[in-house]
Image 1 (cartoon, rainbow, N blue to C red):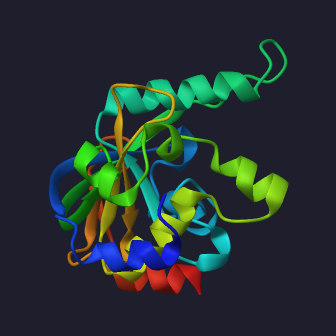
Image 2: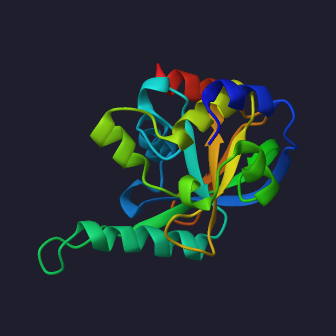
Length: 200
């Protein structure tokens, strides 16, 4: 991956994509009726968010079934059968209308960034926990978010057929519309202003 200064230089020259339609956030079933279920993801470190940077990243999957498979497979790694079963998960659908998306699944974009699938899907926790520093993807996210780009499209590290989105909610032009509740009848939105208030 290019160093941070070089990343800032190339951002203005990258061809951005659009992303519309539905995307899905996996949450524990007991939290699926409240927009507050996404607050944790906005606050804590992740592949495209270093907590101290306060970027506010919402992670979404474009395929509901593949997303649930990914989350359940992660759960099996963390919980011992017969002792503590993994929690059940549901998905909260978000209706997107994003016009500024950096598509890191595109080999041409990877070439400009001087990165590849291995680095983009590698373990960010290793850099955070062992060296107390940002992973390359977290540096990329900081640069992308500060450039006003709304999201990064990226490949899942665990499920080959799953493409994910890291949405920088502070940058979204139109609020994200979420369908909540048991039958997805309750509508709510997550806007850039709301995100700023949540992260204060």
